Length: 215
Length: 270
Image (cartoon, rainbow over all chains, first blue to last red):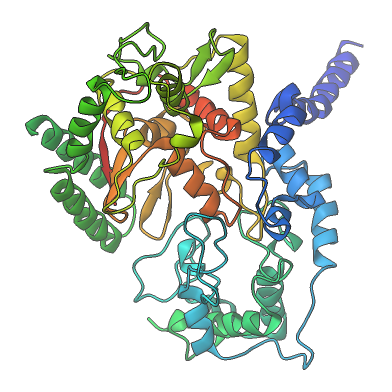
């Protein structure tokens, strides 16, 4: 009797504990979240062009990630990973591996896309992936960030199978297809990079001749 | 100057200590960066802004030909020692939570008779110094050595801190960014720039204690408002208005997190 009770008690705690842990983290802003959203949106100049202001609109993934401080419950995360995977589009010719030299340039460029009245980018400013901001890539580049994992020797370690090439393409196109609420931008989904540009970065990661795979 | 140099040396040792666990190559780079920062700190051009700000504080100016000496920055009229370190806070006379900059503008309007529309020169650019930034550098310097103290206990302050927290985690834009993407973890960096975890006291402290700061790359002093507005530009969002409540909310959230860390202003940054 005692043993049964203890068993029941133990199981209850095991089930209740994770649920409790999830509930313990309050959504940012708490009861003021709605008011904070209105305050945020009303703090921009009225003469902002509407295509600038559109950048502040959140899709369902962004909203969900903010609500859970980028750490959603696993089941919800899986749901959003499927939704994001369904957005991935491929180049018309189906070739997912491009020119690593073009990819090398795109990985280094951190400019482009700045808007606003104080220091906007001039029209036609080259827009890159800025991969080095967060990742280690070619060994010769010391000024790399650490928000993302090191991708040095990406192709050397993982090989160049079709699966790996598709994985690299998909991850750059929509990182949230693999990990909902990851820190990595969704370059393809937002049309920040074109499918063709993404294939160049894939080549930079995978091509044996790329400096990423040279010691 | 000796005091500042000592602080920089302590900072250099601190940075070197953190660089320890990473690759030898990285620590060499970090050492070089520390040397660079040390060289910069020896003769911070922000000192000139501080002196200019002091002059502007005591000078009779504006349609009312009055100085700012009776301005109440939160500790009573004319009391500046430690005032910056306890802002933003709730002010009864305006029924608003105000930061150093919104309070200063309030004083320039009420005491000196300036119109809000006269005070458009918020930002210094090289060769065109903003009076407001000089004044803020002076006011900030008066809190040097004082601990940041923004417990946000008044209900209006607590609400503002919560709203700042909401904005800190709010994702948007073509890069899916929020403040927390870069500033929500320990020990990360963008390129070679170390990033503070602004959700912790230590991280928020490192970020908040040195503003206003001389930006070498910009050739001028930046205030906290200017810094946060630029964060949004870097996230590829539109820029919020100067003195917007959303910026004051972020400042309240960050100062609350940084409470207890000691001010070292004006700072100097890359």
